[in-house]
Amino acid sequence: MKDWKPRIVGFLCNWCSYGAADLAGVSRMQYPPNVRVIRIPCSGRMSPKFILAAFMKGADGIWVSGCHPGDCHYMEGNYYARRKFALFKNLIEYMGIEPGRLHFSWISSAESTKFARVINEVTSAVKALGPRKHGIKTMPDELVKSKISMAK
Amino acid sequence: MSDYTSKIKEISERLLKEEKVEIIIGFRKGTVPMMNEPCFVKTPEDVKELVWDSNCGINLANYLTGRKEKIAIIAKGCDSRNIVTHIIENKIKREQLLIIGVPCKGMIDKNKITSMFENEIMEVSEDKENITVKGEGFEKTLNKNDVLQENCKICVHRNPVIYDELAADLIDEQKVDRYEDVRKIEAMSPEEKWSYFDDLLSPCIRCYACRNACPLCYCPTCFVDESMPQWVGKSIDPVDTRTFHLLRAYHCAGRCTDCGACERACPMGIKVRLFTKKLEKDCLELYGWQAGLSLNERPPLDTYRPDDPEDFIK
Image (cartoon, rainbow over all chains, first blue to last red; front, side):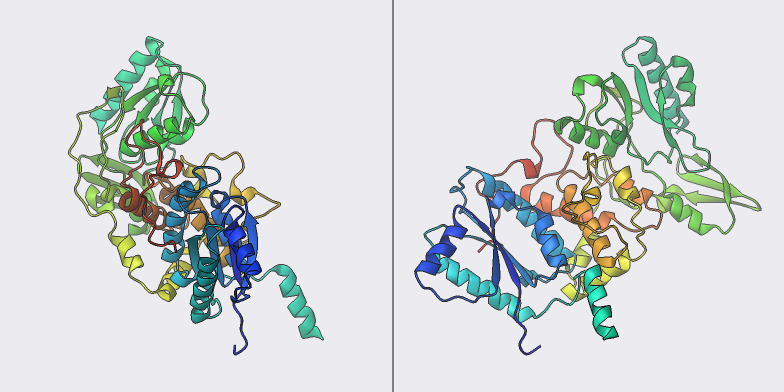
């Protein structure tokens, strides 16, 4: 596992954290390339199903980022999201996902330095944990592929 | 318990005769011991079918979803809390309901009793604190407190929270530590937790009995039946099973009253309440919320406070 690189899925709110990623980019900031970004309309749009699906399909870490409380484009989406996240994070860790795999942050579109800092923190936390040991579902087609490669 | 039954019959007969309600939702004797079944009584003549004893663990709020007529429902503590939840989630109107409250002294766990005997149990009767179990070649008297359902042992809302009629005098509430088992799991390492739940869920056959028995599960299309995207596989793959249980519990976050219907319905005897109880504990600790106690408060995931805890957010 020497050349293992973590695969992290980042769900970023269109109105803030996604903009921060843009700003970090045009500002030529350096940050690890391990996060695959998915743009969501609001952190309130985050469904626990997204997180579970990503974990099930093999994501090593997940990071959800939205606007600071009070700054939501839809007034209160992130307030509702905060309660959902708190309960969900506790539940998923209660069931055996390591605490360093699931991250949340508030990053405004001006906070490109915070964006770079958080992405560093997330990546190093996930790197420290190493690859996932449990809970990745072997998809049927991957099974078929592995059978084919064995036959060869 | 016979005084409960006669009082329930008396109230029900009166309500039907006075045409205050169109149906009564209650329990009648089941065809096998310890399995009372829900029944809908529509005429005063059928009121004699109604019973009340320690085998009425099914949550009757489950039968209210979307009904239009005027209903009288027999409700123990947990049922009444689920009725409150149904009302605040607009699944039934308070004006439609006449709630016959039953202060509940706990329901017995049929699996626990069945596992005590090798031969088939033919008859179970009860008298206050004693449960007498009879079968071919044996007869034994058990203490009711030893064979209570797990959730009844730690119940802190035995009296109905809303009611229009009462079938008996209110009883004292218990003072117990509800979350001992949850704290035990919380103290484990992630690895231990993972294998603990692997073992816990390994007998699961994905029959969805826990979901069907739950009064909170009324979505038109359940997430397990969704396709495109299909969030949870339908196999008994351990990852799918775990995802199902996690999401099922999460759907009940801030709504679960720990009525135990899920655990009671599980044919494999899985302690599925361990998931919902964790959420219940968090809702209490983070938001000071207990489900189904008030008609005027919104459930925790339907509201927020600007100063909600957020120490887990960077």
